[in-house]
Amino acid sequence: MLIPIPDVLTQDEVREFREALDASQWVDGKVTAGYQSAQVKNNMQMPENHPVAVEIGQRILQALQNNPVFVAAALPKKIFPPLFNKYAGGHSFGNHVDNSIRRINATGEHIRTDLSMTLFLSQPDEYEGGELVVEDTYGSHSVKLPAGHAILYPSTSLHHVRPVTRGARVSSFFWMQSMVRDDVKRNLLLTLDVSIQKLTQDVPNHSSLVDLTGVYHNLLRQWAEI
Ligand SMILES: O=C(O)CCC(=O)C(=O)O
Ligand SMILES: [Fe+2]
Image (cartoon, rainbow, N blue to C red; front, side, top):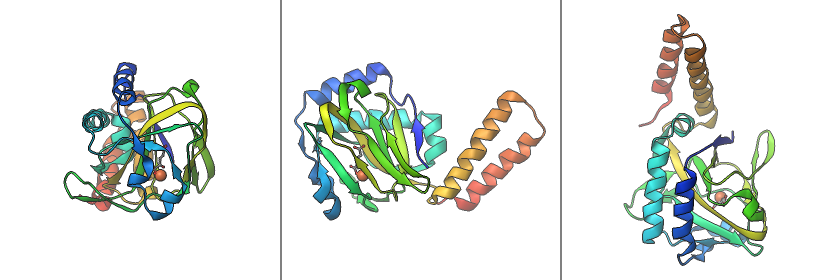
């Protein structure tokens, strides 16, 4: 399931991050690609250990940890330090599935990629094309969100980015390991969580809330790897 996460960043943060990124040196995006994806990857990237990328990446991680929609949807265990890419002048990224295991260079730690995320840092009217197209069991979904918004999708999905034919598309992208590896189970938990929150608002003190909340936690206890 594709899950939009609105307002990860404020517009002030987007402006500040873009100013710093636009003033920095970018390199060929193939540096972090696996063998197959390197054949179809044609974009630019900030070097992983560039101080600007590291600092903005940490600010993005903080914003995500304080975002209840993200936490409920991803149930994150480990998040890869955010990377940054840029597509301009016809750049695109052909169909691929993300690498299953990633090593975090700074710590030597490995993560299993359960979820992939793109956080848009360009407004949709700044560029033509550049849609992220993700295939899932319900078909193909084309995603282009306002700057500061993100899309979360299963790392098992085949996906590509359409050519950017005008302007530039800048974004942050990264992967995470979830406490709940299985997409179906994670999405059931999210549906239950959202329903409990809605019921809490609409009918506070409803007698079923104790049981439903118990079911949520008991399922999470069954399924979580921590
Ligand atoms: O630019 C994007 O939205 C996705 C990038 C991507 O798929 C990747 O780097 O593996
Ligand atoms: Fe990808």
